[in-house]
Structures are given as C-alpha cells and as structure tokens.
Length: 400
Image 1: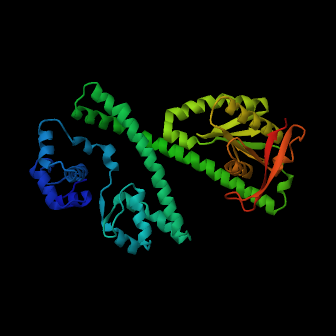
Image 2: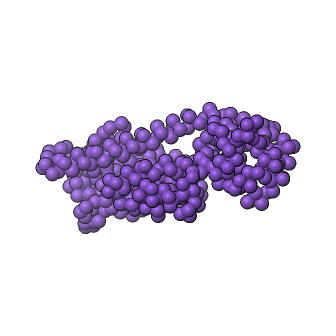
Image 3: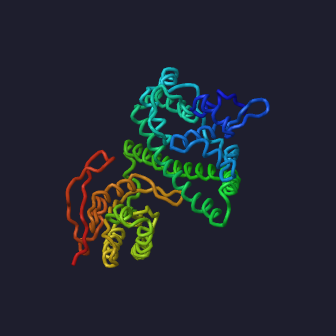
C-alpha cells in the first residue's frame, strides 16, 4: 500500500514532524514518487518507542549505517499483522456503533496494551471486534458478560503469544547468534522463516480453538439433552452404573510457583503409574490428565471407590503430596475419546470439596458401595458451584 507522509504518521501514531526527522536521519526513505509503505509506518512506530526509551535517533541511524542494525525485515509479509491506527477515536466509534464507551475501552486492554483514553484513535485490529460486540448487545447480552469475554480471550491469547515468543527466541533466534550470525543476518533469516511459520501457526491455533469449541459445545448440548429428559420424566430410564472419578494433587499450584515446571513434570511422571495401575485393577481407565490431576472412568461406582482409596494410599506411600478425590455415578456420553454430561461436571465439583487425603462421593455412589468393605460417613448436603440444589456428600474410607 502506498502511503503519504501524513498517512504514515497517522498509522504509526506519531506526528508528521517525527516522520520528517526519520527521513532526515535516513531511517525512512520515500520511493521516487514520494510514497511510503506500511513497513515505513511500522518502522516509525518502533523508532518512536526506542526514542521514548532514551535511545537517540542519531544512534539508531549510526547503527544502521555501520550495518549493526537493519529494519528492512519489517517490510516482509509476516509483519502485515502489525495493525496501524484508524482515523476514528474510541468515543467516535462508541457513538457511531451504539456501543458503551467503557466496554469499547476494554478492547485495548484485551489486545494487551495500556488502557486507552476515549479520544485516542482505535487500532485497525480493534475495530474488527466491534461488530461482534455490537451483535452481542443487540441480542441482549449483559455488557459485563461481553467485558469478561474480552478479558478472558485477551488473557488466554496473551499466554499463547508469550509462549510462542519464548520458543521463537530460544529455538530460532538465539541459536543463530550462537552460531556466529550477525544481528542483521539473523533478523533477515528469522523474517524469512516467519513467512513460512506464519500461516501454519494460524492454522494450528484455529485447529486447537475449534477442537476446544467442539468439546465444550458437545458438553453443553448433552447437558441440555439431559435437562430435556428430566422435564419429560425419561432420564430415570437411562443406565446409571458408570462412575466418573477426579483425582487432584493438593497444593500443586503452590508447587509449580515455588519449584517450577520441571518439578511439576517430575511429580506428574511419578503419579502416572500409580494412578494407572490402581484404575486398571478395578476396571477403570484414565480419560485425560489435567495438569494437576486426572479424570477416570469406571464401569461401576464400587470399582471407582476402591481404586480411589488405592490411589490415595499409593500417593502417600510414594512420598508425594497428598491427593484428594471426588466421585459421582450416573449416565455419561462417550464421544471423541472423552466423556460428557452432568455426571462428569458433578464429579469435578465434588472434588473441589474434598480435603487432602479425602475421598468424597455422591449419594448415588454411596448407595452402590458394599458396607462390609467400606465405611461411608455422611457429611450432609453441600452447595456446589454451578449446581442448583445442595448435593448430599459422603466420605468413603476402607474398613479396617
């Protein structure tokens, strides 16, 4: 795209006089027809940031002249994702699109930048979020829900890009310098590789996102089906023998914070055989690992309870931090290697109530357990997050 000097200034968020200084220093150069490019706008924004950080433009220009730095890579296609500023402020877009200004300002924070002022120009990529926000509001969304959606998306994607930046630095950028490349040679090479990675990274991100949508949408659909069967009085006809068990290591988050990811990975490696062996002995199987714990499926409630107590004991005997367990029995739906439904959700909520070393179960599980081998102690109705009515829970222990 051909840009005038004024357009370069607008897209970069700098004054026209700053663009003039860059031209004078030789850091920007117009074509024969006087036109600039999107790459020039990106360079202008970066140069302004460097100057604000205390680095004089003259020093940057000298480094470029000596061949120590080169910003030509910003012309490459991969950097087209760097958005410029639009000609509309947050206040103007708010009035034009009938979107609350306070909600619109959250977009800047969700994008990972500092909070904007109402009269700041919106970025071009920020404008792309406005149609969806407007649609949500016209369909009756509470603005607080839209704000939470923006912040959750922003936080999750920020973590993704931070991880991506880290592996780009450690696996691509730094090894080139270690091999003897100059900074200029390295920047040119990684920009070239960036063009190769670009589309594939977008493809991978969307694939994971869509797979997670399938998982969560399926879970929601199954819950709606179960509710419809409840209203029709038909859910009681479904088989209720399977049981879902969740096991979690108490204090896992603190362990990660104090000892790091390597210690957490080592703990998970020691936990895996203990859980798998106990589950298989009682007719169960691991469904999935969840970082600090595991979800398991059993054919019957008593098998789940027996395995759970074995796992709690094995974890303690191995010198690992104490685990805790939640179990519920009821209908589940198997799809795509995973289990869905109210039973799964309730088991996870029961886990949240269990203390370290404790196995808590629902009424349905307690009713299926042979009291000759187990002690089942009622602990009364408990309010569970996301569950309409209190749920009667029981602690299960092996009878001496």
